[in-house]
Length: 421
Image (cartoon, rainbow, N blue to C red; front, top):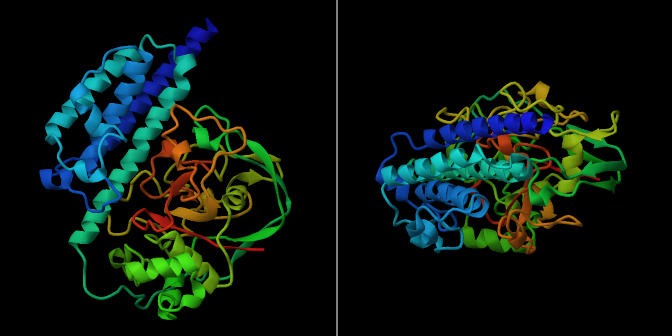
């Protein structure tokens, strides 16, 4: 009886999350024209319409085919929407929006029908993975739309602080004392690369209380940071000479009121150069996660910096709530209720944060539900990002979550903070 009641409760939670997540997904496409739906603004990213079809494809593949043992409902889409089906440049030839929405709705109806009879206590991890998978693609869709908007509204000149009452966070660092803590996460929500949780010892270090702000980054720019090889690694300087960038990607979207907001749209190389400029370095992901999640007094790891309560607008900037507003980000000191037990601010939401670590599996790693989700990226070519952004959905927002990208990528909503030994 207890198992049946638990199964019923879990199914209700899953069904509600599926529908809530889908509503948020479809809201991104309201009023969208065909050109935007099929446009590829950057060679490394697929059109937003492809992501929408891919969400349906993965849900159909893992629930209807693998779990329910049903035949593929739309075999004509298998090559188009599989992650390894076509090169990104060939993903612009898409069905019309209405046709993909029909695909999405038809698959979802069958999925909810199967959920009623599914062995949810055995499959719960898979269903939670699918909700997170859709959430991750929602953020990529948002990013591609922002990239398109950026390309369409390039303005002359560079943004600068005008009569700003700058919140001076320079030099504000938090001491993280030496000791062990628990890295990773073994909860039912945790993705394969977050597992297994394990104890790690770190020496004492200091970490910035806040992410690096636009005002602080402008000092680097005005000091010739993009012109001086002294601050750049060999690989970073080579990248800079090739790309010829002189400012963060989304810099022209900023205003004179955002000097206290976190800088974003920077590559790992730009973050590394700034850290050297101020005599610091980027944190390892282990250092970042300890500062964000560990409560030394309680001797335990928290899912979120503030504890176990799910993210809300009172403790972080996430879930695309500010999409459509002039400023997507918020001041780095805006969420007092969101600070960690160590007093570190803004670790979840607002902007992703680059770390010094290469993406790799923890000891004992086991891929789930397939190697292509994370394991194929254990190639010493991707840097770990932590924390989430203003566009990150709550289902993938936790201190143990690990994102990863090549160090030259600057299209994502990524900033950083620094550490010192």
